[in-house]
Figure 1 (cartoon, helix red, strand yellow):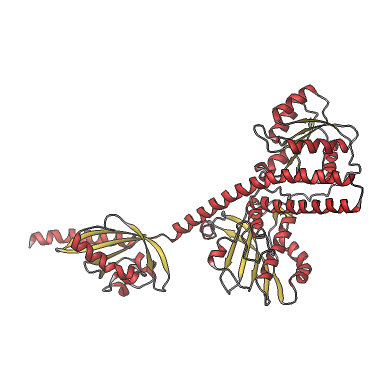
Figure 2 (cartoon, one colour):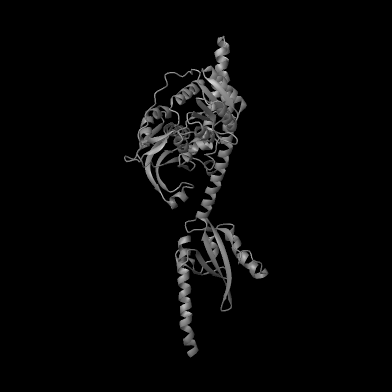
Length: 518
């Protein structure tokens, strides 16, 4: 009796310690007997599955599982008792749980075996994998989109070089044609090439390689400015309304891209409502924390302005929604869409430091959200520069640097026709040698992306060696264009490929009027 009294306090202490551990555990812990009947549960199990404690006790644990686990569970236990072969015990595996409301969710289940008074029991530790799986999906999606961006960006870069040659030669050919029918043929070819240029522009937007020209703006201004045009575009069967935050934060973004995004989303919404419906454009201030960012699958924590375009249209099934931002993916009939609208919006948002998401269900409509980072500093207004009065040269010496032979030949020809004296080089090191032999070069006109020494590095080195030389860059795509601060700090401007003769003339003349670097 004395021995029993001495051990009882110890047993009571151990039981209290065990109870405290179970009550404070983050993961759900459930014990069952050899037949699968639940013996005990901890508070985490109640929270995870949505049942009260009394609703667990005495029931077979398979009620917490969807099919096929529900029907197969008792067979697993029976097979283990008969053969001793372990499938989960001491190993753990990913399975699916079912909550009280009928929803299912991924879980990791680890099972251990123990005996109480000679009777076999099992303890299961259950961890909710919902957030982990969401993070994995977001990572896979980000990796997929990044890989697609690199591929499409590279293709667009090479295609822009081809288009530069095509457009340039067609322009010069057109000036030499003597009959109207020949000029018409050249004009149609030039128009087709410019359509190709617009397509590559959208690909570059998706690939986050577009050269943006951001400025501080209020998104409400764009929504209000586009309202009348959207009313005409959407037609009488679509009711358009705005829900604009009166105290909306400023953002720093490319105004033309914002306008294009709003129009694209509105037209997509109209097409999703063939019998008419409602379209709502909403702006709001959003503060995203770590938890919100995880739920939005990739948005970084911070302050954002959210532009939402919602419709009451057909909606999208999950398979369509998951691919909606991919380039060239479209559900529209052949000839009625390129599949680049949403991909361009996605790329623009990511390049601007923001994000884009889609919420949609069949027959319940669609909401596309565009997140742009809050602009905290009120910068000076950007003054519109005057158009150069004279765009032709007067014999100034220009060094054209381009690694693509065809583009380089065209550039030299164009510059000569504009009245400039031209030297050319196929690489950065070659350009530096030419500069050393020709100290009177007035302007270094270089492609931005070249093997070995980039145009940015070339201009930096050339200015260090020859402080009087001016510089202008050109590119159809470049990783550096996603870091405009470096170009701005170096006071380097970029002429976007493919460009027209007039664009080249204006850019060269403007660069020559700039004061040389000291």
